[in-house]
Image 1 (spheres, rainbow, N blue to C red):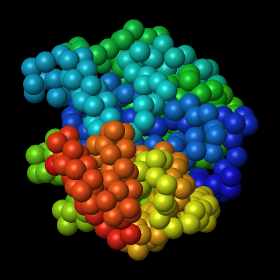
Image 2: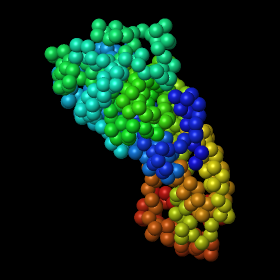
Image 3: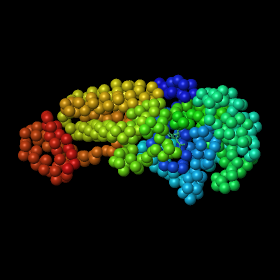
Length: 482
Ligand code: AMP
Ligand code: ZN
């Protein structure tokens, strides 16, 4: 395998090499469970899903960790260091007159259901932030001991001036921050660009824990450092998320984790650019989103959305439009129809004496091209173009009655292999029962022998079973359910 992935840290495409041969450790920043998941979130998760699937295609054993943020993500996450405002889940709980736990549980369940709908493979583990508070406290204590962090009035902050490579991921070095950043001043911060590791909880706060500094709650960034190192070790192969995670979230994760372990935190940083609606980021806080259920009510499927996402490169922003989803729906139907046709030609061939055309295996040519596209930073639009070309070529052979059952089988096997990467769940056209195929083959023999009385009798019999035969050239036929 010669997979090259664009690494946000080095700003170049690099050949992927795992830390341990044959194994890959991968962390994806999961949802903050205070609202319905939207297609923008799903686009980011899908990049990680396709990357994981492609690594598995090449035989890697992938351990994927996707966290559930059920505390600590504050409302003002687009200002400064993302550590001001109210807890998003607590705020929702107040509005809905529920407990934060009820809110988190409800939207966590919804998140799993949405991932399933769009055929994202389950992560190996979905750790919850609230169940890893002790690991966070351990890291924060160590950061204070090492001089990277300080405590004031029960709040603990990371002192970014102590971490010399701060800013390497996002370009937000201290010098740049000093010049242009919009920063929220916290009275206890030494420098406005320091970020919170632990915050003292106000009395009315429902989610709070004992700690050496105060009864409080963790900062958003420390959660991902704690959970990723807990399950993948100090250094992991891949860390993924959406482009908004680069700063401050991932920049802070690097500072905390490397400050704590003294080792490199992540080898490959993979970021998905935004899904937009009307040129703006689709987001929960803007409310410019829809759910998969709303999509279904309009008559669309999650698989069409999956195909729409695959048709754009993850490092290019994608503007969601309804005509684009219409196009993806048509393309999905085309792929489904093609795959089902291949399958029925293949199964008919099993009992057939006369085959249409010679066996030719051209799938390996397409396989090479598919892999070349995927190897180039997961170029899914190009990989799909290769697939569409194959569909055109095979459909032409089918129309000319030159596609043998053996060739259909080769191509179908190839399709099944690459679809493990694309993850398009295609409904099987109803299988034609073997008895019906036998009758159809007997009828074909009768027609070849010009025994039309028998041929008509067999057609009648097949019809009684609820199937219909369409004859085509050279005594070939297709069977349909009536
Ligand atoms: P959140 O639940 O808001 O923390 O987001 C969960 C994940 O979805 C994060 O990795 C975000 O970067 C990602 N994300 C959120 N909105 C979008 C969007 N419009 N396009 C792509 N990724 C997004
Ligand atoms: Zn995270």
